[in-house]
Length: 151
Image 1 (cartoon, helix red, strand yellow):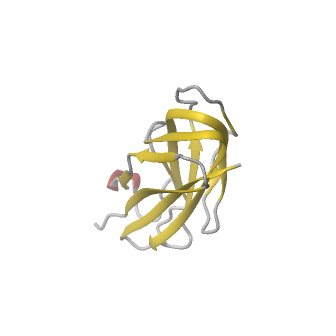
Image 2 (image 1 turned 60 degrees about the vertical axis):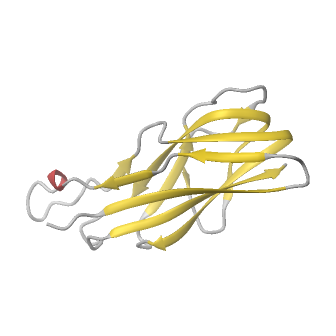
Image 3 (image 1 turned 90 degrees about the vertical axis):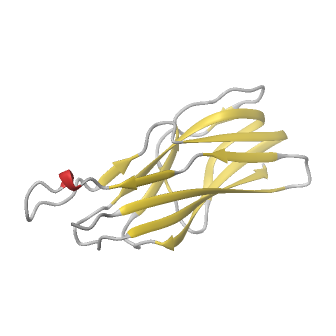
């Protein structure tokens, strides 16, 4: 039986005139277990979730900032959806805000979180939705891009 493997790579960019930095630690490689197919004609569960601290985000910016997220589909099926959420606040001298609900990634980008100053080890979690037996078995690869900018 062929497997479906998802590889989520993380990248980061920054833009502004202030001294700042952002870094991401971690990635998610996931293989759908063959045990998810219990008998012919039954579908996959459809949704797969990473650990709550799959990736850690560090932000260093002397003022108010925002982190945007977008997806680059390298080798991806258009029916699959990737969601990301912040599962904690990390630590540091700055503040962090923004929902802890899942946010769907898209190729245009949208704001994930806001804050100011320093925040370290902000945990992020991924979720892949719309997995189906109609999607061919394949190694699918997508990049999740985080961008730090002055707010």
